Length: 332
Image (cartoon, rainbow, N blue to C red; front, side, top):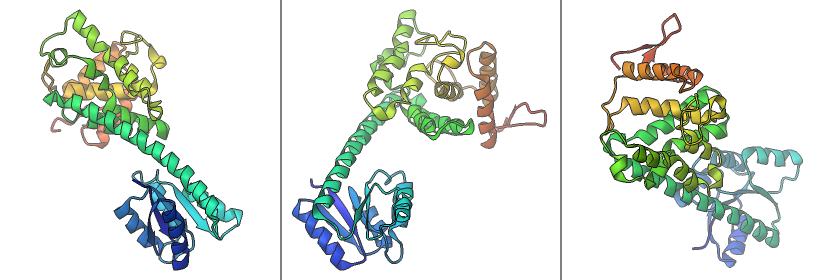
């Protein structure tokens, strides 16, 4: 299928010229007469690229660009500002709005086609990455679906880990990595037989060795995705322990990536609070008590645990009395 391009200009002659140029070279073209119509047409058509005039009625091109680029669902669609404005200040405003490129009026056909082809090539690569990520996410959910006791586990880890990462001040890219890792952290369990994965009793040493390989397998599965670069350390190290007794590398203390330490706390909380084939669900007081005792053993990061308690407090699960120590709201 040919790429779809949305042409936005309040001048009919300009729209017609661009439509003829692009249609002649095999592109599917739609057009909008102003900025507000452009947003509505974009939502309906989901084009691969937008050619956008700047000075228009109802909503100018800069605002349309800004709205498209601020929306996670549309921000990767290339936007080219087509304008007669030549001042550097106007270009700066366009860059700040998120524009991917600029074309000057009157439009040169050779330049138009070159820029369109270049941006559509990048868009095709981005779409391929998104499809690969979607396959990984689907695989992770299919693994979770094998065990009815873990329903919703991935979504809970994704949301809680991202919230905790934000609360401790991690950069945006690491928060995004935590959100992704919450879903795919156990994707390597695809290589673990169901007889081990769903075993209700204790694992043998051989079975435990097999299941411990899931972090390495998961890292290998996700490694080809460049966009998952910050996710890989979380997948590999979310079963390490602060005293070095974890796996697969026996890392100690701050050698464990902070993002992995964040996911550990959330993963442990959810695992303890939900029923599993090998254990009943614990009450919230029991969960926090168990986590506290394991922190005293030197397994988990106390500072991150205390911030997580504040996140739970904000959600009404526990309360913080004047003493500063946290108490559990028994009714929750």
